[in-house]
Amino acid sequence: MLALTRKKGESLVINNNIEITVMEVKGDQVKLGITAPKEIPIYRKEVYLQIQKENEESMKAVDLSGLKDLF
Image (cartoon, rainbow, N blue to C red; front, side, top):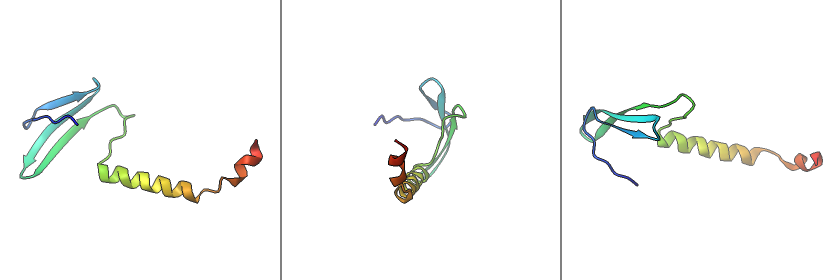
């Protein structure tokens, strides 16, 4: 993990096309602004983990037994 120190209004750039800017700092909360191409999905980690969990559960519910008849 890379740990950087940034102040309000300062940014960092990832892969030449993603910019993360510190918008505000209040106590133990930091507001970030993210500029990235539209095709790059951006999620809060707890939302991302929930999506992954739901995807795994939906795959368990799918009956793939009929697939072998296709080949």
